[in-house]
Amino acid sequence: MNDTFKTIFKRTSVRKFTPAGIDRETLVMLAKCGMAAPSANNRQPWFIIAVTDRQLLKALGDALPYAKMTRDAAAALVVCGDHGNDTTGLMNRYWVQDCSAVTENILLAVESLGLGAVWTATYPYEERMEPVRRILNLPANLVPLNVIPLGHPEGEHKPKDKWDENKFRFNQFPQH
Image 1 (cartoon, helix red, strand yellow):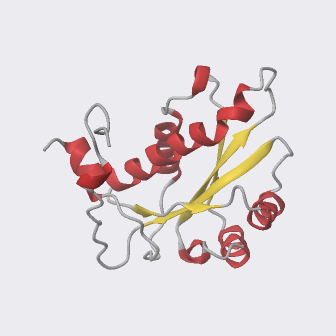
Image 2 (cartoon, one colour):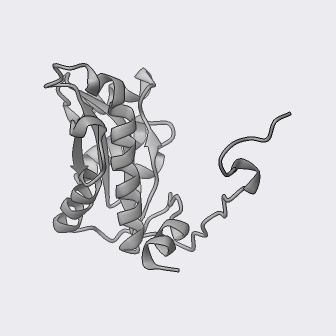
């Protein structure tokens, strides 16, 4: 099994972190990995905010019901859809898929570094998007898709085997 396969199968959601920090260069590299994702018509409708300020991390953790672990994370990456320069309407149609690809790239890169992270959804829930917009002073053109708390994993985190042969076919379904 090659290293890419190993990273994919080892990736798991991590919600508990040690107090150790993550340097800026690592956060920039994770964002670069995210932005290496494909996008519809190569529109690249994404914007990533790296949050390292303890007060902002605490505020996000306090405000988001499924992202409480952000309070104790070393950092968080907030993946947003950027609707600022969309003259074609394509961004509005595909930004969720494009930014989801960015997010998965980030999660795999985090795993490859021996770090841990978890995808916490904000979009399409206004009650989750509004506090992120307010806390991070987001301009109106940015729509937060998710908040990814990340850090050094505390304890052991075992990945789940999610393969289900009943959810896979070659070619087509048999006729009934």
